[in-house]
Image: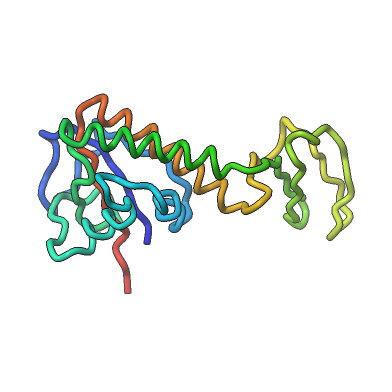
Length: 193
């Protein structure tokens, strides 16, 4: 299930079926992987409850969300955190997300793709240097230039890089929304079918 977080000034919050206004809005830039947010919250807590369980309870509980949708393809929103009462708990959650990301980072590798067949190549960051190799699949030359890599990933689990990216992005988003005094709303993708 894909989650979408939005923070807007409290006086701009509207009821469903209206959409939340697009101006004066903060949103984290989350990886496009559905499970990234759930895994980012996996062992994090918010107000002595697993953050992941709080998300599910807000969106799938007995009392359905009743605030406006953040955009096309998403259902109604629920309040995840409201300043000032949730400020200390949300800041603890942001700290916890960043410490989980540091703990789970593992050894990092730079990643490249072959331009012909899209075969992926990863080299530990400590060993990365400019070199040209032949692709094992198609034989096309692949330039392993550290300045032109596709980015960094964890050598242990490539998906963990997206999870840690989501953790860092959410932590920054939570801090900025609370600094502005804006409520944080969450919604989920509407299931078509």
